[in-house]
Image 1 (cartoon, rainbow over the protein chains, first blue to last red):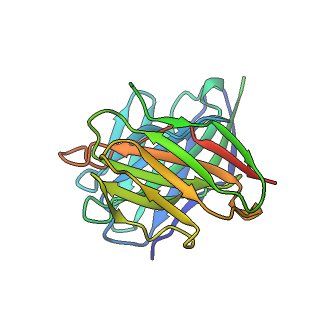
Image 2: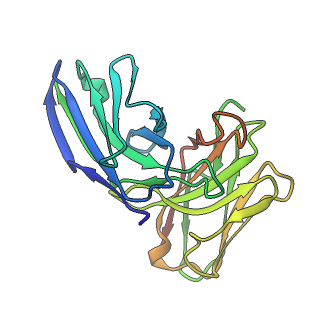
Length: 113
Length: 116
């Protein structure tokens, strides 16, 4: 019930390409879906987040697509750059009493120059 | 400070010893979270504070783990009788706790705990 499933586990993309990472959740109480970027030895950094009242949110090269009926959401990185090489985590949370985030298992993205 | 600060950044301890990990949240953030991240995994929730009280400690793995936040700001995660399986990166995060962005959580750099 609390799981967030993330795929793929690893992704290799050429510079300038589109990186796509997918997540699925089960708990319908989730109403907040952030994506975090993590570099080795660093803590996760909030990248972009969406709430279920919209189906898409775009910030610069990063876009979240959200499908409430399918309980799925995805991160698209347009014009991927070598500096985007990092581990990406999707997460889900609730603005209700249980505020903690449930994280996916992560996707290691490598953008080749 | 500008971000969430965690000390120490690295801690090596012997099996059976007691350790304390400290977290300084973003100023004004009322919500504070502890997570544990094992190698190659996503962070796993341990405990959530709203103000001084533990609003949810359901993620603490056993009674060797305890956390406090006595004045509603700095928090300390305490681990008794450490075991090798406790080795992980312990992450602290804080969020505003109220308002439209109440769940936007910002993480510290973590404390890497190694139990030998």
